[in-house]
Image 1 (cartoon, rainbow, N blue to C red):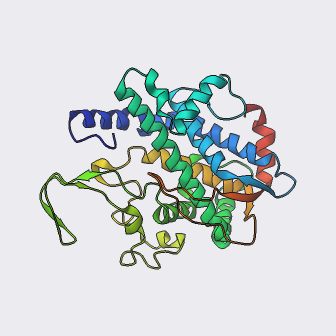
Image 2 (cartoon, one colour):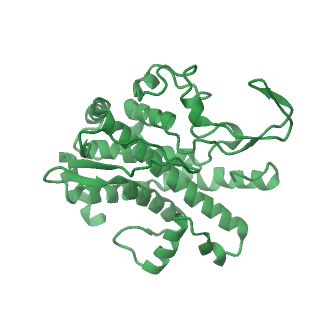
Image 3 (cartoon, one colour):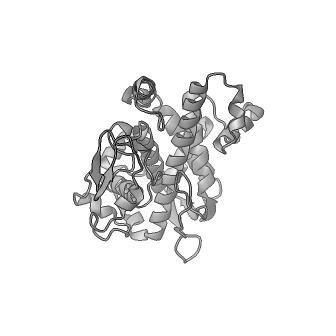
Length: 325
């Protein structure tokens, strides 16, 4: 869908995505899957952190979370974790997430193959990368982390685990996510666009049918558009700097990411639950390394590690739902 030229095939893919996969009704149907996988993550983090701070490696946990959500949506099974029913099948599917395209030779329809592969790779890596960057930012900015925790305790409390409908009340959490996507967009280059007619962009004459790449990373850090552009300041989105034409982490127009709704729900529920259920600190006094990697998505070069300690809500979650995890 991302690279298909405009035409009947692209319109059909877009329609299927909008109506059958990423519609509001369909996403609501899969809410239970997202909540269940977030509880799996919370349970894994809590195993060694109920009595005090424990070091955890978050990159792999976020990848497992997002991959299992997508696979349960499309196949009804988990393919990462400790309760796998078919380890051989899980191994083959894991190869897909690691880029081994030979697994797809058994799929006869190239269109089905391409569609599922894009859904897996684009729908898992982008959300996992965003979660890792968000946690890294909060670890490097403990005042902002504390502000998000205070909002969570005030709006949700420690008597129940947050739910997706609660996100609308968590304005600062939403600002943290928006600021993370501004500084560290999962896809720094948006999907290719094509000039529908001759035009001029920044003084350059662009002939019709020219392929154009939009550098969202550069736009999001442009000091002409953003005050203190390279600083992590979630408060900027509380002050009205949310112009969609400046913040374009999911793209714009007909080529915008069709899975934006799923990504927003997954990231919001996961990040909010981590803030509600655990206290977080850096592994050392030094700031987390924020060096950016190279790829279609923009990973951290150094996988994120952190210290976490379960908060009181986690004991309640474990006592009520451990048998379901």
